[in-house]
Image (cartoon, rainbow, N blue to C red):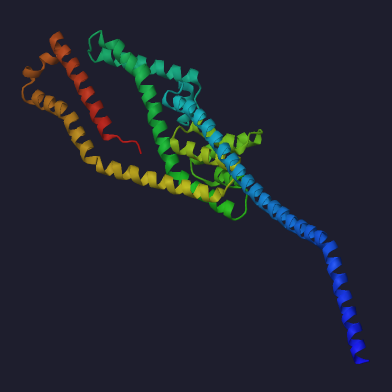
Length: 337
């Protein structure tokens, strides 16, 4: 009986194994297909992930390239505009020079004052016993040279005062931006509280904004009335920040530091060139001092220079050569920082 049960169990076991083997044979292809499909799905998912990573990296590179191109285009545009402004800065019209000097004087009145000055110089030359050919020269010097020299002198003094105060004004804007205020509020604060001529220039910016001009355009226009590279730097920083974005407070802080370094370098160059300037002043004044001393000791010896035509020619040639020497020495002593 036990042998029969063992035989039946063995037959059942063999039948089950046979059925499992047959089922495995028939389902092998399906199982293999499912495994292949699973592997293919994993491969596709991995490829999609890699593709997404590559696409994100490509988008980042494209965005960076687009931003660089935008900055480069902005710099090229600003460079073209700056070249035009540089030409105007080197040779501005007379009306613009008067405006840059901070003088509220109509051009017609300036011409009237120039004519009066030329007439006064001509009369003084006649009363001083100058020869007739020197009278027109004195009129030209008084009517053209002196008024324009005064305008140039006042403009240079105004630019110097602007450069002394501009870094402080930029620091005020930096602190205002860091505290959360917009840049326009910082500009209005400077236009109301800062010293001249910075207050006037920033007030022009506020007035330009009130008539619809953007802040970068108003900043770039500052060089029209304040012809110095520092004002151009300020406009360029505002323009680039408006187009490309970035930390405005950091950019203006760096600009303020650069302006202070430029000022310190100019002072250092001026200190190092004082010896050469003193030598040039002594050399330039020496002929006049010697002529005056000779006149005091031997007037008959030097008077032919002033009363004869040959002496006038000698004096004219000497003055021309002295002017050339002073011009050369001035060019040797002046350095652009």
